[in-house]
Length: 480
Image (cartoon, rainbow, N blue to C red; front, side, top):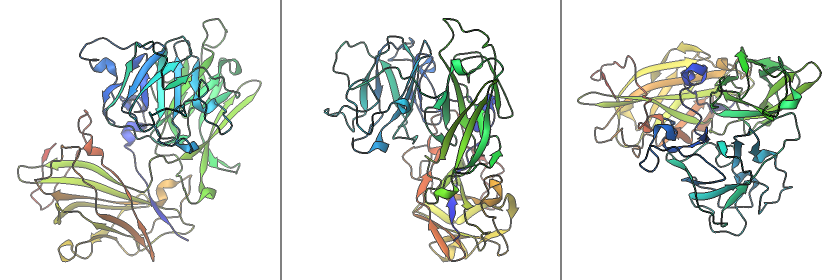
């Protein structure tokens, strides 16, 4: 049976090259002993760019700190409700909650990053932490609400001088029982940190990070699934030892001699690109995994990580906004993927707009299927109904999904629509989602439930703009 899901296309300019990654993954809450303060989700900042408590002093973390505005799970009975944490200390030891085996039980003391069983802090947003390791904390990565990435827009991580023993959370040092591990599953657009036992590799060894395959199979396919993501205060930025990246392969350098100062673990920070195979929550036989492979002179080390979709792939996405003296406009993309075993045709996207959207002023239409622009139209005219149908030409098809050629199974429609001037597009509280979005093809109908409003995070330096935004509806030109 055919099925469509919608897929969020991330900004490739933000993901595909190291040089373009001026912002770190939002989940890095401490970087180089500096806590993140007052950062928005899009415009990532750390305290070196913000005054701390109205001073210019940087927060250097010891064994105690406080995390504010992160809501932790209310229930302790759901294993998947826990928050994964990776803490890296100045001596390059670490705590990785994935490496802790509690046999399904929730630890009270030093073992794992869980709330204590008997406290009143579940559901609260400010929490105290104590590290058991006496070495200061250098880096902290939090996977909020287990394998999801939805931190509040204003997260603060501050030093805490209190000597009170009534701390809510504690964690120490973990020692992985495998040569290579990671801090969480693979998610497109998010960082993943590989942790490699220093004693298991040597100078010149190569880490391959461009391999994927269907789970349970051996046939591999290759693409640029990851790019280095700079986060460490080291010469290479994406790794704590000498390393070079080229075409999906990382070569380790300068590891000839082990000394007392040699880091016990090698950390490689990567970011998943939009070339990763898709995730199918209802069809596990179609899901893929990445293969991280180190081929040394004496041994092969591999790590297999499932490719998930923390961000629901069923999405409508705001692309940009623009404004004239008289009118203002919002541009959207609705993108879909054919996950069936045959090509999909009779494509149509139905949208029911909320109050404040002018259905008589829709322009900048662009239809795409299988990687190519295709004909399409509004049918019937928007003024004749409370719904708008974006109708692909009858003969247009999108191919069956193939993880080695995902672009052939993708279709989308882009459009801009005028909105009432009473809607403040610079206000993060302004709702730009729709009352209803349904994708049709053949006799199948799929309602889209999740919406991503990227332009709502306008406090940052990034701007999302409509380019060549011209049609016969006053031709907006002044960009926000």
